[in-house]
Image (tube, rainbow, N blue to C red):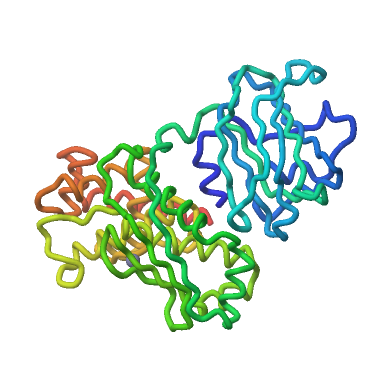
Amino acid sequence: MKTILTLLIFLSCSFSNIYAKEKPTDQPELTDNNLETYYIGKKKKNQLIFNTDYTTPVLSYRIYSSGELPKHDPANWVLKGSNDGKKWTVVDERKDQTFCSRFQENLYVVQKPASYKIYMLEASTKDKGVLILADVCLYDKNLEAEWSSFIYPNIDFQVLDPETEGAKFYNKLVQNPDEYIKYHAKKVAEILYFSADDPMTEVKNIKYTLEDKKGVSAKGGSSPNIHIFYSTQHIEKSTKESLFKLDFETRGVLYHELTHGYQYEPKGCGNYSNNKTFWACIEGIADAVRAEAGLFDMSTRRPGGNWMDGYRTTGFFIQWMKTKDPDAIRKFHRTAKDLDVWSFDAAIKSVFGENESIEGMWNEYQEFLLKEAASK
Ligand SMILES: [Zn+2]
């Protein structure tokens, strides 16, 4: 999650309380990009001041729920702006908000943006009880701009084995599975495509089942109708450490499987079961999306292997290409649609120019990994 946040262009997450009459407790926890540390507010109306001398208007913001019970989530709030810390103007107001899961971001586009030096979020829970928040981030960009016309898939969520411990843990983590899956569908599309108006592999219906089976997760069917299975046994294993660990794993797996729904399939190189290049492309891109979402432990990244190994070996490589071009994942993915005969080399040439090659790019990546390993 940390990676997602640091990769985004954000105006500021820094926070201070110079203008607050009384210091709310634990304020830095709100802006540390760590969803496991919380701001706890014990007032009926909690005032959180964001004072970093803003020079451009805040156009959108994200609020992250904590890992605590949903009754502690913010439900009603106003975002206010001020230039002197005395006179405040409402720029955004929300009522009866809910979060579809624990550790969940909600993104809001500011309704009445204007230039202010400082901002204040005045928030309370549904029953005006103890407020618990993981993070708040204010942005000088409308992060929804390219994506407001995204068409969400229909979700058919089924718990086939509700008596399992895994199903119960999932319930603790996810309060609204339909919204949770829809949210991730859009996030996957945002990583694979430039905007909601891009020609996109259409996903209309997602059947998502929790089942008491061995394995982790798998995607069946083919777009526009797909089925994703998630193992309650795997959920149980992941929860042993913490609810946060379960969240990290559940989202990570979902990013991977949903990518299979939304991604282009490479052309002119066989299919998933009979061609290794096709397979490595499909599984590599799925893990590149998961890595880009910040849902891999990147300390597991090591030198070695080959770009044809698929999964995270290929995925980390594709994601690393973003160090050369911020749109590298989107461009690399697009080659699957554009090239008549897809190969890793042709894809690299298409993204970075005819002088580049897959061997050259891989070698450069290996050098980077060796340097990284040496500095540890
Ligand atoms: Zn896969």
